Amino acid sequence: MIKKFNYRTLLCGLLISLPCLPAVSATPEGYQLEQVVLFSRHGLRAPLANSGSVLAISTPKTWPEWETKGGHLTSKGGILESYFGEYVSSWLTQEKLFNKDTCPLAKDTFIYANSLQRTLATAQYFTLGAFPGCDVKIFHQADLGVMDPNFNPIIHDGSDEFKQSALAAMNAEASTNGLAGLNKELKPSYDLLSKITDYKNGSVCLTDKRCDLNNEPAEFTVEKDKEPGVSGPLRIGTSISDAFILQYYEGFPIQDIAWGAIQSDSEWKMLATIKDRYGEVLFGSPLVAKDVSAPLIKYINAIFTQDVMRQPAKFNLLVGHDSNAVSLLSVLKIKPYQLPGQFEKTPIGGKIAFERWKDKATDKNLMKIEYIYQTREQIRRGDKLTLNHPPKRVVLEMTDCPIDINGFCSFEDFTKALSALQDTTPKAE
Image (cartoon, rainbow, N blue to C red):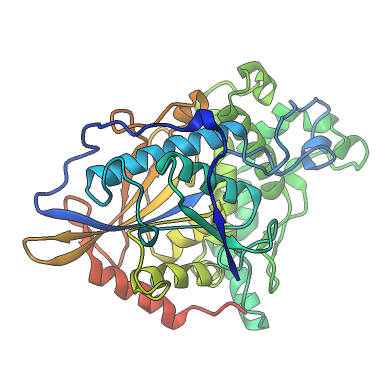
């Protein structure tokens, strides 16, 4: 059951007016934006792993303290999301999807978040920036702190046949030599982490006698009703590199970020690659992505085929996790892409925009898919986003929906691809 959340006020200091600003980019003459679905990764959070965890045992050094509870959206993360909401509202107003300085009708917005603190708070702050002073409802399931089935990237197929196929698919996604091959490829990154953390002097070595990160036992796991899993250096390395990246985003002093040991952009990229590959091998192989994303794909398809509500909203925001983003990009067969100014492939607070446009000259519907995201420096500085100082926007292309020079593809081809997934995607129980 989905419960309505009446969002009214969070921080009065964040009530931001929406200025009249110039265009984001040129739109072909006669094109009208008619509907937007944003899938958003939650905003800036504190590290998921805290004291007593893998972080604590991997180093003799003291980790910087966070004011925010582990896994929760930080205050800065909330402010950044309000800026993002203001920017998106300005864009939608400019494209005449909404009217300036007017609250949208209830039927024209649909905000739906996973029921964890960081996702729900992201939706709340975004809504504050996008529609200040408006009574815009935020939907979430009744059980707070529990994963909503539509956003929960768990295995749905419990058959042994699927398990074996999934393990094979994850190994194939990892490298030609499977997980072992990937860990060998990532050895320079693991060695860098070991050096930064002084791994050989952490309690994991001194007490548990596990002194080489590269030699940690590693295997994939697939089990019904659980997320795909991996043990070993890939998992450990992801927890540590994630903590460093979040320190950078939050604005910790440089000398406190990884104890001042990260010396270059290339080293940051090495660390971010661990985290990116973790997500890709667990949630990005075609077989696993199709299974874990089934409920979310079904939901997005329903929005575009008018099944979620009798009259689909003009603007839809779905707030989930990087695991959702990875599986969506995989199952939609998005071609390889680069995000300038970012080390991560699915950055914190990033939004995959599905935009339905109409070419008035031909009366045809078109689809444009973009990754809208803040650069690492925009996040660290806490930049306010406007149409003059926007987030980055990168056009994405589906293999089954080829784009033209302006980044548009046939809406019919897009919906055919979604429908094909509905025919073959396992259903959540």
